Length: 192
Image 1: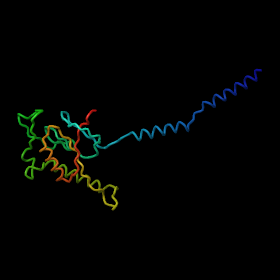
Image 2: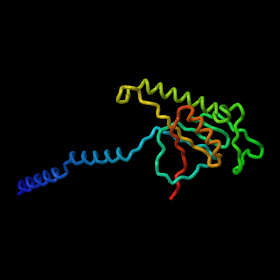
Image 3: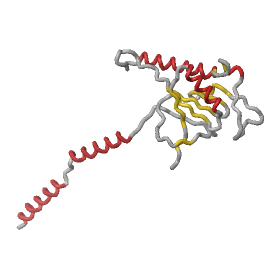
Image 4: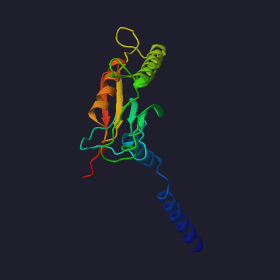
């Protein structure tokens, strides 16, 4: 009778052990599904849009995300291109630090072409365009004819909502003269 129990006990243990074997195929399927989900939901962008403290951004209801481009930031103090301050506005005592009625005036040496083009911004944009064209010429990515990809000329403008249209127009004219034809205005997304 004792031998009968031990044989029966071994059979049960063998059944229990077989039931708890690790099913690798099913686990690998689950891990692949999770990996595909994570890869599909992961977004990456090389565009690093920054803002400046105290900048009052305009509000927009657009749902379109900003694409990769060079960035010009216009604050009440001056113009910044790619995180480098290139132009300072002339401030008067009445307008310095004012939230309403501030005037964004340029110094006489900051403008040329009858006051339409901002010299320092134009120089910075031309230098950035030349660098981009050089990098595209060195790249292995080519168009259908085997030529380097053309310069796309996209620029993102982040401007304080208090900036006058005249100042924005000068920035756009300067950018167009430097070869940038597509303007993207960065705004704060409207909370719903």
